[in-house]
Length: 84
Image 1 (cartoon, rainbow, N blue to C red):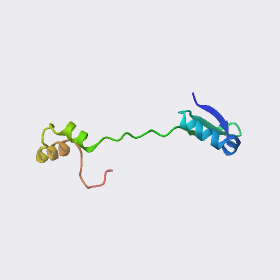
Image 2: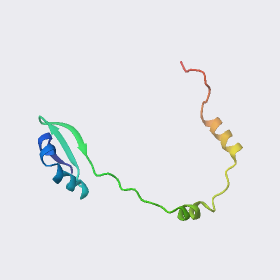
Image 3: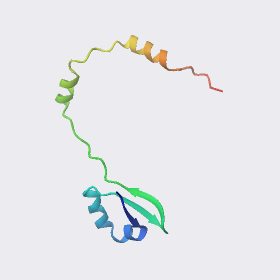
């Protein structure tokens, strides 16, 4: 559950709020009692080494580009004419 904080708390206690975000806390910012925004921790990105990716996809079947184009054309209307 997100902790509700006022605009003034955000301004005055930004260091504490940033440390809370580091710990995974979320906040709802209010102004005059009205919700105006949310602060959530950023998602951490996971690095996957190139050799791991190559190994994972190394046994995947080759792509037949002509068949792929036919499948796309069959599913999507790619006519350049404007739609009414």
